[in-house]
Length: 220
Image 1: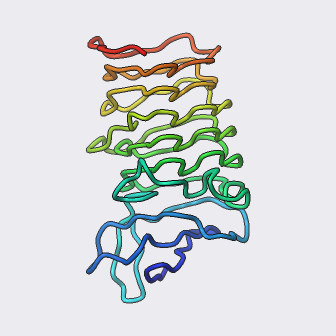
Image 2: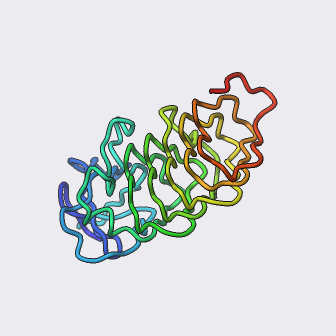
């Protein structure tokens, strides 16, 4: 893939533009809004890095605004058109992705099946909220860095087909408000979580077991 500042970067059948000017001599790259008219549905399969026309490599670390992921609006989320959010059918991220910003994939209704995420990632508010066809979440890779959940919550709220058992990585220390509200989980393990936000598991009628740290200090 070749690109210049502001020009769409293509990954499979989907495109994203670069956020502003490229850093000099390579570096960390943030991807922000999706292009206005993706031509067909497909998987968003991010490479570890992309190169510009001169061969300079850029590592992709952030999906959303790199300076303030918690304040950004979505890549393919509900803030964008139906054409955006109905185009994403799968998501495959390399381990160097560290941040998925606010509303990045909100209401991506065709994002289906298991969702595999890097363990070192931090998910911001509404990151995958209302992705109603996601059936499982698996965290893989190194736990260096990242906290899994930003404190603002709602990351998987209303993912109604998110079912079965979910093991959160050891680097996770909280389950924020409404994070798993309206899901079909049966068991959640968060062995180092010391804080649980308000309504984190509201309307989880199939949930029978939650495993938390022995040092829990706050239950919402």
